[in-house]
Length: 587
Image 1 (cartoon, rainbow, N blue to C red):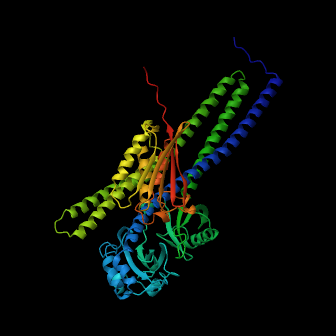
Image 2 (image 1 turned 60 degrees about the vertical axis):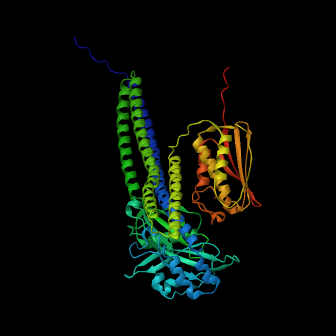
Image 3 (image 1 turned 90 degrees about the horizontal axis):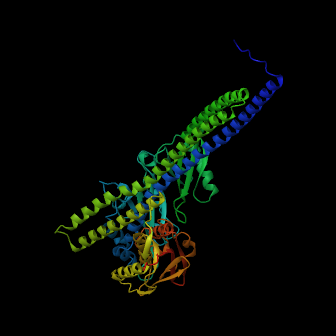
């Protein structure tokens, strides 16, 4: 016997139709809103990833450039102190100036073999008189050939009182323009402290290879209203130059901005390289093409549209089933939950991929510092082997020993950079435990007194015995060593160093003070920046990493490092630590 289907009431059919229509309106609306906000979220994520990648690459390039600039500045400061050069000016024996300088500057001049390799050897040099005019050399071949137009670019309004940085536009044999980096240093009388003249050295400007820049970045220099790119750009140079001219005219701090050049979007970054210099302002320019970002955004948009279409079809089917089988709403909810779970897994996978990209960018900075260790070690081994020869004079042995000492200083800088890279990447883990700060202070003061110098410093201390703080001993010791080393280096003969501590609720404050030159108010806000070397540290060895490293380590320990005051020849720094909570001794 076959059962016949009873006809459905009209009211039930209308209810089902209205329910189906209402569900479809809700689904279409939700899908449209979700599509809109998802597209905006994905686009924002891509732009943020791009900005981080761009900034990471710029930071890596600037770190390399700052290391090279620090090395050049240190070498140049040593050159202007050579006694034979001072004697030529103070005795008014200018006819002996360039012959004397030829011997004094032989080690920094580029030879025919290296041709200024790595940009650490000068291509030319000139002396400026006290009025800033170039002093003509008797033989230009010995000091680097320059045309009259190029030599005129070296002149200054007067002999500078501090180091000047500029860029010289040179004309090559094939008619193209080339740029040289110019460093001008004052020559100061040892007797009166008066600026007698200036030494100007020209170095080949470093042009990074494509592999070092990566991601299609184009790098160049904006000088005297013209844009000089290191390598040809896909975008029109004229349009790029116009965009850079507008950005430079607007002024302001270094920044990046989006622009459309030659019909294609680009990210443009500019930064003045020689603020405050008497030479013409020069701006570093980096151009980052955004075609890859647009392509990825289009692909993500099509994927989102496909997912939205699939959701609409699924919603249509679900609504139809829900309308026909009103008794099965739970099944429809389960289907929706499964779809939401799949979307969440896709979002988590995308976030994981973004995290891996950020980790690779952080590892790049660490790897760059790590790769510097091997050449420095090889250089030190070669110098030590050279020092072991028996046919060297005492002066040659002293110079080689000085170079070996510099390699140890450079190794210390590389170790600091590696430690900073680990902290930037979030990979530095602190093994917290109780540490006896009093014993660490005693050991550090013993090390300070053991250093041989002619400052004859008086060390004062006031701290209680067995003062316990929370942290890891080797990193706390590094903080303390950096503070005491700064107090020694920037002190004055017969000066004082004072270290005191005080404990408050849950915290310990350590203050290190020293006599010496006052840090100017304008420079105080920059002293914790990496590679910052203010006017106080111009004649003090170092690279400007100690305070930044000490502050980052202090913050990882839950404390902080700050400058308390610097006035009337007295400077004080304060670092805070967490007070260790010791468990009561069991009887």
